[in-house]
Image (cartoon, rainbow, N blue to C red; front, side, top):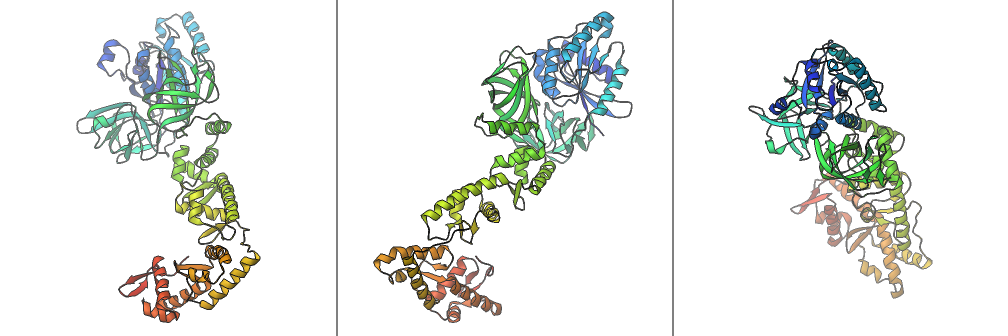
Length: 638
């Protein structure tokens, strides 16, 4: 069933509350002060039953300028607006202001209700209707029906109800697949229920037993009870006025302006990027750095507006802006807000949030403005692609959802499409990276390797850990290694188990170095397991050759041709592989090996056998238990 909220708006004492009572039979003035003064102070709530058995919620918002904050709190969840104008008075200041607010909040459909028609002559009503037509020109109410009613006499009420039902049928149903969100406009205790909050559920579905997160505090509480239109229910749906009882929450821990949401699904920020605009009939402008009151949901806070492509925003103009907030704001991309001047208090405009997690730095560069344009006008795939690039590293689906302000289902679909068209690269099971970011990392990596090979021509490549630290210092080891794998697939780098190099890099020895290498390899070939220490090997060469010997020795290590068992013992790779094959065969027949057995198996001395076994212990292939080593994780080694 479609759930729709209808809201009243208009000047004080133009008959909004009486109109709602005539439509629904419910008096929305619930406060004693409201009844005494005859003025709505807090937003009131009712429901309207249609002839087809369906029901819509109605919000009666206050019209007095002093209560504009309450009007804004109530207007946030409206689907259809009834702009109420008294026939005997016509268009008044709050009529204009409320229409401007409804427009800024993105309400796109509704009608005009001309109340108190019994108090005005036909000629006067015709003049008022002309004024209204001029007022709504260029707004969402242009060309919409103007319905004349008298709440006192009941005239026109049936016709209005029929018109509202027709409009209700054209409202696009809210998405109930996304996580729930409810801006809190009232908080009060009820015996036996604890703390109860009310608001309009603007997204998703909330059910009894769900864990609700209270933002911006981040406190969590289970949903104990739900009421819609005064009746208990197991679930409330987007578009319904809802009362929720929270378990284990003290009154001081939640207040008007907070937001109830599904766990971890709403960003809390002190900076937003937005498109901001000034009302076309405003007599004031917004200057760069202006301090404003910002109204979002039921929350009011002070902000400074830093305009990104203008120095001053005049009536009817709009531009991108960075808003720096004095308090944290729970919000998401696409949310609407209204801004009023700090002094005097006057509605001047509003806007739409484009980025709820922007960089704090103010930038007026073209790429920044182009990114905001994509957030404002782009589809989910374009926004996902942009945000993946802005993240600048590996990310998970959840990371991207929060950064892009997209629900998981939409985000997942966009990621799949972007992987298919090669705009995103899948690194691991739930880790991705922008193809543009990967290309940029590859370019930087190539530059680092060119520099490294130039400074170290006899080393096979840079140590992987060293490269990670230089190139990807803030990326986890697993993700960084996956990025290296992707660069290797793209033929940007070549990897061994320890080093990274350019694909076409080869160690080139000079004639003198080649002679030293040949002499060294001959010595190692003769030695087998019983190799000399590095110092003893160095002693085989003349004083003039020692520097080049050290470089060649390091190149054999970095190239994987020598395997270090200890600081004093290095085996050639083929010798090491022979030892691995022998001990592997031993463990196929026995569940343990002693130092003496290893020494005899290799046909070497105790010194080399111990170094080999301790090397295997260090790789967690074996572990020492008493005098015997047993297999720990096997021989899948690098």
